[in-house]
Length: 295
Length: 295
Image (cartoon, rainbow over the protein chains, first blue to last red):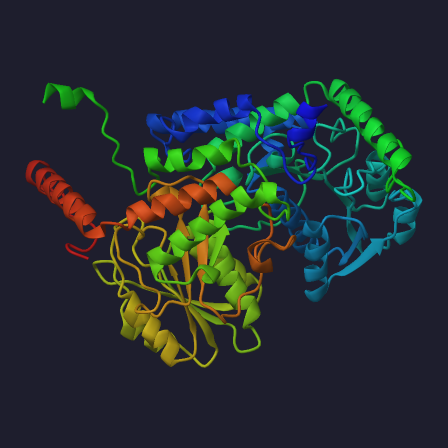
């Protein structure tokens, strides 16, 4: 116990994680010998290009998508901004209404507030006592003008997991796109964009032992989304800027590791979580748990 | 000579550079022990925070700015998008006209084309036979509705250096903001945002032996620029998203190294350039130099 008492214990993995040694090792060659510009046509750049495409396959496999539906970004925040602004602008001739929840990350909430200043209308759904968004509440909020529903997969503060598949089904029944911010969910909740009726999904490397400044947006094939960052023809002409090759390679390796054994990971974390919750509630008066007891 | 003939020679540093070993070494601790989220308040995150702030000082020093005027981005393309869209949206009640040149990088040109679709008007100035934008042409293009002039510091294909200080002076005389894409210039052209009358300046780490996926936007204090990426309160609330700490640290070290001896660097490069140009023109018929012979 003395030993433990003197060792710092990092308990803010929801804010950011360290990088796994395997991730750093995967990145290492791309910090030195493989430095070519992946957009260059000559053979020397093939190493960078192949690193990026391997990572694209790893991300696609982790969420049940095809590689051509994965677009790398500089993080979850950029992915959220792109998904929501991009879907709003690309579909504004069909309607100007967005449905989201009051407990989304600021990357979603502040983006929606900015869109309100551009003439869009946004409904911020309340949540129940456990932080859940009810699919019937989403359905009740949808109007003829609704073009997008955005509800996170798991909450970043209280951890509640949302009924994403049902919310996605409701959105589709009414002709709206469904975006989910899965930044906090990757590695904890198994994701399948098909089964969960997801059109747009944001993720962020540094939440699952990958590098900071890396993320991705899944865009279902055929989904109309306007570009957020204009310029060169990278990422199928949809997200400009020379690729962060080592970061992308690290993101790919990290998501592969994080999704390899979600069940075992959750069993270990749940046991620690339950012990901590019991210990805190049992020894400090007037404490209560924020969030859902199981979801 | 046999030895040289068999060793590949990388000649596309304008597309991207390798990272200097000093840059990789500066980043290394931030790939492992210093992994805290710089926005966290606890002591453990202080290492990350201080790495980011050291880099901010290094970038500021390299361009003659104060640290509070430097905002980190995921690259030069994002910085260009932010500068131009941000200045356009924030100043649209004053006017809707932008002046730029026909030889800007796609990150500027495609951003301007997108703004045209949002109701802005853009003049694309032609260049002379050496690729130069004439300050008198900028002055002639400015109207009462002009809110922004954007001309690159140095061209990415033919290398021509523009008369930035004079173009900035002309913009200011007519009440317009001046943005320059200095992505290709850092380390080759000494930059002083004061002397050169610059309000907004974009730069990119991987062009001067720093990491890919890193960049910065200089925003002169008091300049009205709308946010491009909304979310958390990072970067004084103006650019959301958890900071790419190792990338930012590498960018800072790289710009410090790149600007330490610009004169000596240019002397070495110019000698190699002249030898190459003489050799090619002297041995291959019908060759001519694209770009300015000295600028």
